[in-house]
Length: 569
Image 1 (cartoon, helix red, strand yellow):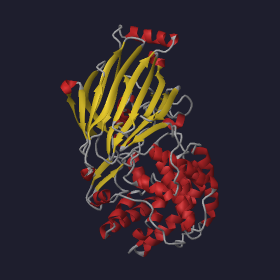
Image 2 (image 1 turned 90 degrees about the vertical axis):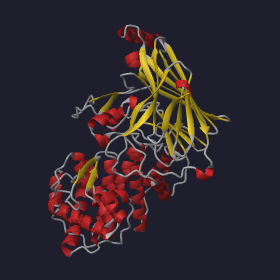
Image 3 (image 1 turned 180 degrees about the vertical axis):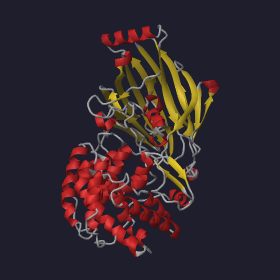
C-alpha cells in the first residue's frame, strides 16, 4: 500500500516554492560529514568504504537497516555541518540519484516515518541543497516535496505508534506550513498529533518503551512542530503544549551531570548538547518533582549523579528493544561517566543487540546464566521473533527518602522468583556531598512458596549454591586496577579524580573485561567491569559494597582533557 500510494502521489502538482525561507533546525556532525566526503559511508553501524563521491542509493545494501538510515536523509545534517562546496555538490548528487531511482515509489524509503524524516531534512536544508543547483534538479526537488507531502497525508496512520508516528506527523506539519499549496494538511495533522500526544505521553511525561533517547527524539519533534507553527503565526494546541510541559521535567530527571541521558532500554546518551538545546528551545522551565520519572530514580549531589532503573521493563510491542535492566544503576561524576550499562548493541548486529539486552550487560545483580526478564515471541500476534520481553518482574517496589545526610533508595524486584524463588533487594545510600555511594544487595526467599522454589533450584545444582554476580561496568575512559592486595579497585577518571570500590569480603572481587556499545563506532569499545561473585546457599544472601571519591581535582584544571577519538575508531 505504501508503494501504491507513493506512485499515485507522483501525479500531484509540484510545489511552486516555500511560503517562507526555511531555517535549519537539525544539527549534524562535522566529523561524520568529512567521513562521507572521504567515501566512508556509515549507517546503522555498518561501514561501506567506497571511492569519494560514489553514488549512495545504487550501492548494494549490506543490510536493510543501512538502506533505511540512508533513505531518511539525516546525513544531510552532517554534510550541512561541513557546509563547503564539496559537501553541497555531494548532497546534490545524492539528491539527484534519489530522485532518479526512488521518486516513482521505488526503494525502501517509502514508509511514513522515513518520509517524514526525509521531508524535515529536505526543508531544513533547502537553501544548502538548492544553491547553485540546475533547473532539472530544482524541478525534481519541488515535485518530490509535493509528492511526499501527499503520500504522508494519506499514509501517516500506517506508521507504528510512538516515535515513527511522531516523525510522520511532524514531517507533514512542517511540509504543510512550509510549502505553497500544502496548507490543507496542517489542521488534520495537528489534530492527529494532539491525539498521539494524549495517547503516547503519559501523565508523568513518559512513554511506553521507557527509552530515554526515544523520549528526547519525540520531545525534539514536538519542539520543531511548535517552532514551525510559531513562525507561521499559529500556536500549538493545548495537548501538544501540555505534552512538552510533562516531558521536560522527565528529561531533566534522566540527565546525567555530563549532559547526557541515562542509557537504558535501547537508548544512548544522545549527541552532545542535544538534550540541553531541546530543553532550552521548549521554553519549559519546570524541574523534576520528587519520585520516579518514567520509572527511574535519580539523585544528584555536588558533581555526581546517580540514576537507577526502578520499575518493571516495558511490555508487549513496546518491549521490542527493552532490556532486562531492573535495578541497574549509572553513576557520572562531572563530565565523566563512571558506572554505566553496556548499552544498545543494535548497530553491531543481532548477536550484540541481544547481548546488550541481558542483565549481565547492566550494573546490577544477576543470577549467573539468567536475566531478570526473559526474551521470546509475543503470546498473541504474527511476529514470532524472540525480540520481546515476555517474562518480566511484575512486582517492583521502590522507596526513596532524602534527609540531611543524603538520599537513600530501597528497591526490590521479583524477576528471579519464578526460576529460583529469590527476590533481589538493593539499598543505596548516596551521601549529600556526592563523594560516596554505599550499596547493599540481597537475594532472599521471602515466603514458604518461594523457599520451596529455592530448595528445588538448589537441588538442581547438587546443593552447590546458586551462583550470582554483582556487576559494575566501567566507562572505557576509566582506568581501573585491583588495589590493596586485591580487596579494592582504584578507578581514575580522565579528569584526574580517583574513586575506590570496596566490599565487605563476603563475595570474591575481580576485574574482568567488558564492552561499551556506542552507536557511531565501527566496533564495541573494550572496557572493564568490577565483579563481586558469590553463591546463595541460605534463604538470604547479602553483599555490601561502597564507592567513594578518594581524590578531588582542583577546579582550575578539572576536565580540560577531551575525547578526540576519530569518528571511525
